[in-house]
Length: 420
Image (cartoon, rainbow, N blue to C red; front, side, top):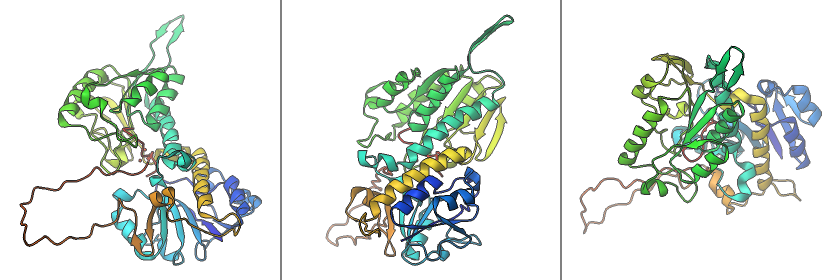
């Protein structure tokens, strides 16, 4: 079994899919590992480190690989197209963002590749060590606070000096999923006064356990606002209005706002309006971790830091990649843990159990078809002649991945769980 780790070719991506540590582990599985020259440069993993771990380093590593490990899904067309260099039937493991990349998923299916989307790992106990959204969102939440502090012209902690007292920064975190909770913890460690909001009732205890103050309209709808899988449900327009009014009053008093809210399979909810931005104090900072999914802030611009109404709005691409060394190390372990599940310990060959819950939840293409139930095209059912029913509109179910902050989290690599 040959495993290839190519260099990432998408813009704003500094991560790599294997570390020297996981290369050693893959060789321990009986695999031959080939790493593309310079693949780990952005994460401070040298070619020599990979060689020392037992990998070969070269320029054309995917042509005969049985397994291709990547951070982002393969580029399917253009001068940087990657799929054409893979052998037919190769297993590809990557963050695929399949709900927003339908054309790419179709192209991957047509190529014959067996693709596992790491961002669809089910939220079950035995899959926790494979959960890339958690590992990457943690780093995104941490980095968001550091990015905010870098743009903020004042100090975070309270300081008492002979010249007077410096008041602590007030930070509001919107979305208390993995990224949001890490943002709360990081801001608290820097000495800020932190509050947070989320539509999931379970988030209240989590926020308060980190020393934050929970801000929410706690009515009956709020109590039912979480799915069985732990994700946020789409809230009613009435609830959104009440929550927006509460947030509008809260946000006026904040120095820093960090937004992390995502809904799997849907655009990010709009939480911070232009009027809210206008109400904030000059010099305040907003960091929008959901900017690549449409953004939580109306005025955020993907890939830019802009100033509107005296407020800096940060919309960095792929925030986990801004902490590439640790992001790569954690992602590589996530990949290896899933890879172990696909390999027979005795024969040292791929032996995929297609009925395994994790395999079924992450595999999106196989044998030339899209096989994931949340992505596979629905077959047309001809109407019954004897029952002409008027069109009552589509009854659409909420799009749901099994596990998206991109920077992340994305990401894109920073998608987060629940609201954040």
